[in-house]
Image (cartoon, rainbow, N blue to C red; front, side, top):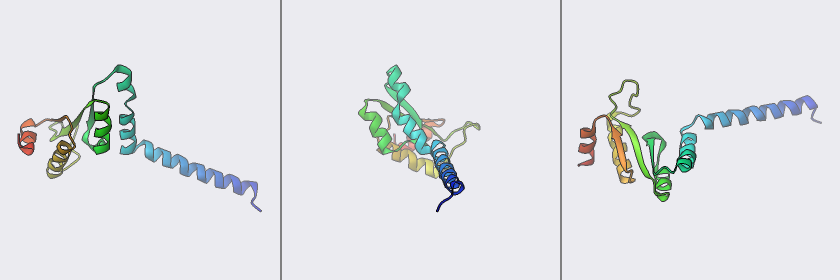
Length: 122
């Protein structure tokens, strides 16, 4: 027989795990991508473009926005702003720029356009 106290303990542990799981999801990159892909504000104001940090987008995200006939931009590579440090090494940034270009982003924002043009061969 399970006592009332045991049931409460089981329920509270289950609740704590659920709340922890939700909190982890709400602070994850997947949640940010989910919110961006919903594009609620963009739909409300009739936006025709979206600009997302490169760490939050992938092929699926780009395809979803392009299917809505929205231009997709991404930022920031090779940042010169000390308040916005690069999240990737220079070599990783080069690889990511080429990957995003292959996935058909419409523009890439950077503090060093000449460097990005050289990477893209333009």
